[in-house]
Amino acid sequence: MIEKQRVETVWTNRPNFKHIQGQQQMERKRMLAMDAMSAALQLRQSEGFGLWVPVCPYDLAEKLNVEVRFIDLPSMEGMYSKDSKPIILISSLRPAGRQAFTCTHELGHHVFKHGTHVDEVINPQLARSQSDDKEFLANCFAGFLLMPKSAVNQAFATRGWDIRSCTPLQLYTIAGWFGVGYATLIHHLSSTLKLLPQASANSLKKVSPKDIRLKYLDKEMNGDLILVDAHWSERAIDIQVGDYVHLPVNSVIERECVRFQEQDEKGSLFCAVAPGIGRFYQPDTGWSAFVRVSRREYIGRNMFRHLEDSDDD
Image: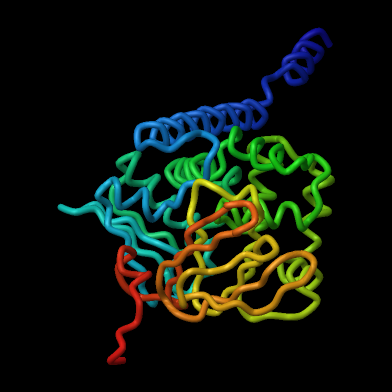
């Protein structure tokens, strides 16, 4: 009887190994996330980017002597090749926000010296559950580089918006400024930075970017829509032919790569019609911003994606 009680006591008080293993895995993920954040912020500072401004990952990669090339390959998101000259390959068939995150993810492989990596699917929303430490590290690095907490807080604060109760339109506007996808920003705010309550995140996810564009312009469109306000600064407006930009009232464009469409009480709508680089400005306030237009589903090296079409074509 005594022996039976002893066995039962040992069995009842035995360590829960699955629970311990889960805690150890969570701690490892936490440490990897901290390493990713530290590397991302250090890279921003070493390359002259403040902690409160958006970063174009293609420009950053070129500064680091990493060639970026867009290729017509539907079966792959991106690839990093560690060769005599490092190169990042990105599928030209993905949405712009997804391409930017993919480029930064591959740049993470470069920074952490992971060697050649081929990524068929890159989903920031699966980062926490990834068993591959290298993929988890690259995903976290991309999130912290593109959307550091200080920059996110300032983006909302300067516009007088509260992150915890932001509307779909407000979040869509901020995502455009950071150059990331709408869902990517929601995930980063809620799961990584812990700035957005999960209930709010779930509610925001129910509204699609297509629904936001339709409600804002009261009409459907084929291209993307970037909402630019007077607080847009520190970065160019990067779009593709066929995309739209909505700017402050009475804004004008200096080049022919973008064409004026219409104006209403909310502002001026422009459409990208040809590759090239131009500049928007608002005569009443002095506000201005460069705009860079690339071909849709562009194939080739990043540094040439804004070249104007030849007159001979």
